[in-house]
Image (cartoon, each protein chain N blue to C red):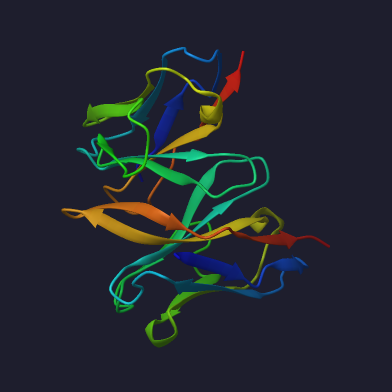
Length: 107
Length: 121
């Protein structure tokens, strides 16, 4: 089974900061990587699919890149509504593993 | 309006059974694979099970294999999860999601609001 590891597990940042979250797969997953945002008490929301494609309606301050085993999600200028937990997920093989999550908190 | 509405959660004793349902409206159901994803309290997301559009292909996480059964009724636009031999560590919010894809690369665009399953004596 493929394991997904995110780093950091949590971070504190201020509004306007540039934030980068890393996701690493235990084996190559090509570009089969998605990113989700989850706020407390809510269902996850798709942000990015196929490693770098921005889901419709998601602000352009979100971007992502990567291929193979290493991927990044970047928020160019953190906004108050971006404080949430972010998950990566591989869709290369079954089981569809998620990373453990990265909680973005207000500094 | 797109709606995925889960139901059937609740409190059950260890060893008990529960059947979750997910009613889908406002988007196409029959031509898409569907999934269950769960989240234990304060924990991350865990993929549980997937079923293809015609129910030909079914997959489970090792943690639920042999205890949970996924099924669907395309005529009713509904997804189900029969959960037997429930354990305390099955306690979680269970979400149903639809599989979309981009040239074969799957992602979960549509999610329900979740239903809480609590397994406790």
